[in-house]
Length: 316
Image (cartoon, rainbow, N blue to C red; front, top):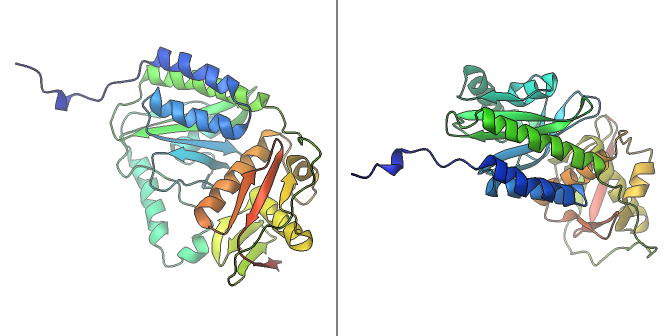
């Protein structure tokens, strides 16, 4: 009699082969956007991990923000977490891998808080807290820090509905992957301006009522028609681009001018600008069909504005 294969767990990935295929692809990435795309694709194809997140650390070490995710109904891009909070926060605070082989009371408690906040009648005031994605019934979780000489760059996180999904072998493989990922991030070249072509100006704008765009100076949060989009460095970037667009009609900008802008208050390390631009582009794609960002050459990008805008600066 043949065994009932429906009762067997899904096959595990051959981890050494997965690493051999993935590491050269990480090394070959030419920018952070491409690196993240390769990472997510290889985690699913070679490591058989369907639910993953990549979080980047703020240089001050006071929080992490979600740069990319895969496998969730909501991307959670821009969601923040504090060191010490849950599996991800513990791995960030201790700078060591944290692996849970089955759901715990603390984990379920944290998810209950998140779900309660989503249903809170004060939701409009809480919208700046973008929900962190996650499985409704998570059986196992693993969070691995990205480190360079004890400096935390971010966290690679994966989870599964299957209990016991992550063992010592999976942890070792993801530690190797995270170490190479951190090295690849740090070694990415700065995207200097390419060529001397003039910057572009306003393309045709669709008709329609102006979009009310509010910028709050206190935390650089930006709202489009009362819907929260982004805050912090990425919010400051968006406000600078829209302000320059309103004054001069410019639509093309360079990474270099952002790095030099005193309005941005960009942290020291070079990977932060690319990460913020990726974050901003993804949040705009999710939150507004009328405003977006796209690449316009090496070290350059284009602001897309499809509706008239009304810029409103709020001091408090």
